[in-house]
Picture 1: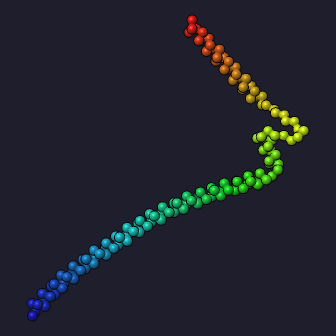
Picture 2: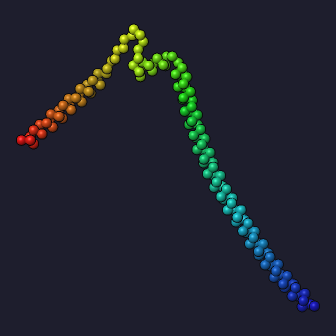
Picture 3: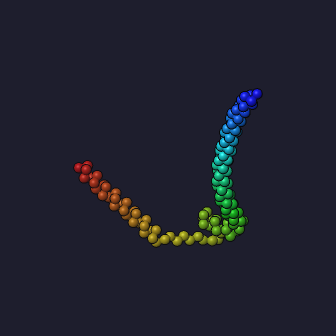
Length: 134
């Protein structure tokens, strides 16, 4: 009888030890799984934060553009601004009004110098052609 009790104790301790090892391994597996999912979630969170900041920047840019367009729209309703655009860009004038165009002297000098240089270039080129044709 004593041998049966000792045999039961040995098998009980052997089974209990195996269960405790399995329980520890299972706990480590669960902890590893939780750490992995936490890591994946933190990566996704950082990606979403980056997207949010990018979208907020786009919103501020679009709001600024919207304000500029509103200002331009309010200017278009202004008669003085429309008159200025009509005169400057479209070349329109009021009835019985004369338009005088003043050209810049520097522009005229640059244009005349450009014409002279192209004439001289053509001249020496023609001279070279005439030498080669002989």
